[in-house]
Image 1: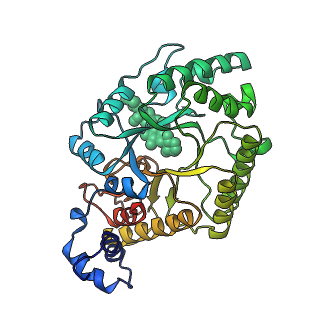
Image 2 (image 1 turned 90 degrees about the vertical axis):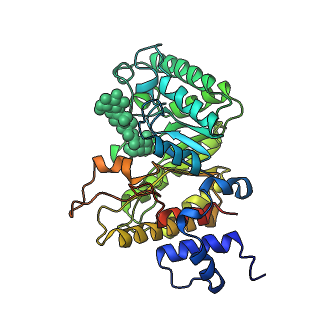
Image 3 (image 1 turned 45 degrees about the vertical axis):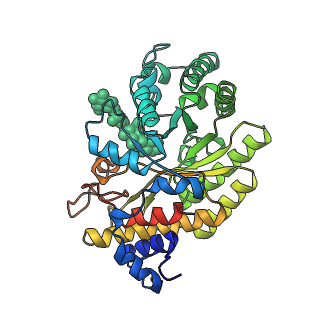
Length: 370
Ligand code: G3I
């Protein structure tokens, strides 16, 4: 019926209007006029019907002074990803001495706001305290992993949506067998550390989806091609070993000055799904450091890039979740490492520094809607 403009057509219109897509569906033009981006339902409102949870990374409420941002995180997200609070350097700074103050404040905030926590991350080469970096034997490394994973996973059992068990195990530039990343874990245990980490996590929490999380597999570059190849080989090896791993976490740190390897990425995702892995988009943001133009033009370029990427992923499988690495441009990690020639701030996330929704938000709304 004319008056019954479906929510999807509204969201389509918002996305179309937002990124300037020429082919806005006629009937929805009226809808787009009727709703501003700010009045559209929050991203989390779709997950019960679409099955796709939305979330974002952030600092713990116990240290985050920006209360308005926290309100926005709770409004938009089903899941809260600790940007740093559940990393080893924060949770076990000294052997056997645990500090979960920040993690607990995130878990409490999530509980108050009917959210889940995405556990990030149990085993990584970075964000580890000196005593871990200095491990040298397989016995020491195994003991450290056993205590750390059992303690952290049991503490948050039932409150974690999914665990990033192993983060970034692949780095072909390290020129090691398998394209594995040179890390204290690889040096002490060989690549078997990955299987061990997942078995320890599964033994502690039999229910929670367990994910291997990686970046840098999206574009038409030699490095991305090598990374896709090495990551797929590892995922295949883990499957052959019956490693208890459920998902591949696609970090999705995008750069809209780059070109997707549509065929290569599609083939990679096809093989991953064939191996029985579910997909999660875990750290989505879009680096616009090289994009010329005013804010509106850059926002449209970012939104178009997100749309192109999500089209590729969704053509293979609807991901279990989409999480952005931060919610507002105000706090993006990227600003520490990238500076635009024109001196303006980067605009990589769904909300701008004023916490208003951007065209990227409209694209996310389009994909997380049923
Ligand atoms: O909490 C301490 C604070 O007490 C201290 O005063 C301050 C002084 O430097 O450091 C604070 O810790 C910082 C932490 O972020 C929390 O802000 C660390 O130095 C800093 O290294 C850490 O950076 C994080 C980085 O991971 C390393 O853990 C970034 O915010 C975070 O965005 C980044 O996220 C990673 C993902 O985990 C994995 N994928 C890539 C992604 C981007 O690098």
